Length: 508
Image (tube, rainbow, N blue to C red; front, side, top):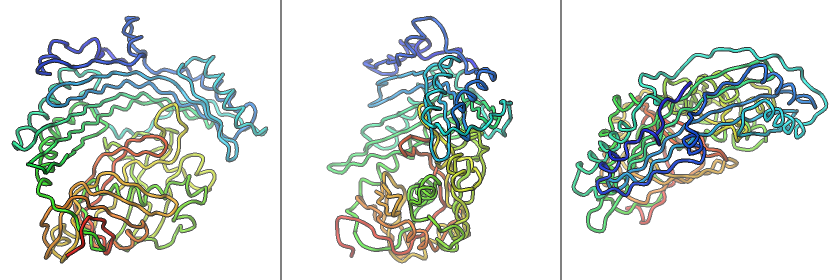
């Protein structure tokens, strides 16, 4: 793997200033990047000798342990911000290092380093071993390279993209957003991409390596009309080359964002009370991601925490509710070729027709629960131990049409998109804010409302879903669980009967 071009060297300063209209852009680079630039060298590719890994893993197990692994990573990132039609900042970073882990019973020893040399890796292994010390060691199997199916295709590698291309994409989005309506007063464009090289090796003899490209593109627009204002948001993210912007153009992303900003300018205060809720397909899936997905992660189950403990094989939702986590969906934001422990990615049906059938596991929780590894062992970077995390989580599509679901709902709330929310994984109680929502009156979507929140318990919600559409769609997001992880959440149009809606006025 090589990185023939770098932002700091390639960025056309004159062009950058031209595009930023009056200048004022700030170019910043990480200390690591600066050191490379000053030294006149390029970052090296991620290559770790297998014989070194064998010695490190044996060192990690020399004071005992059931399992040991090494995760090495090399990441190059670019982040550009455009606000008020000016390029405000551009940051390029390089991070590189490795983590060594030892599992002994329920104990985990872990140490990481920013250097990938045998001497330092052996020192990290010694530290991890000292933490997990058990006295009973498992013999390590010499590592051997394996192959995994690839779910990520790239036509134009990010490392071969000129920086002018990135700036042009952002400028196109800015122009399209501002041209949508005269009431769009400001646009903010965030562009982020990275190339992450990974090596995973463990005491079971596994050796895997790959390279993950990743793009995250966010447009926000401020609509204003008199005293009314609304900030819209639209995101596009995939593991892909730059060709993703040929499939979904920057203009499409910008116009979708601007549409929300304008539509919500006429919003009225949301009514409060218990009512039926229809949720549009797409990012609304974040509700089940938070409220249902996290309680199904097996580290919580192993600690006997959460509403799904001891419920395997039991009915936990309505007959029309099936929930899936699938890390193999091509190029999706939560997709990888293997998880950060080397386990193959797979489609995991978690709840099938209302019956709980599977938890999401990593190596440790699978061992603790005596279950299979499901490919959900993920980590933010080499600085962290892997933990069970969702990938692409969604409600499976049903047989109803979205139009029929809406028409058969006399009154209630139509939720077009959600913003932030929180859930207590122990109790399953959640609280979500609606970013775009409308009243449902006589089976039709009518007046936009602001300030609506959804409040409830995850078991009540999935038991109350009585209609599931045939229009499954997805949205990209960031999941925080002590570590950040890129995920996708999705759902078809669904109807939830009788959910508590928070608002600022009484329901008529």
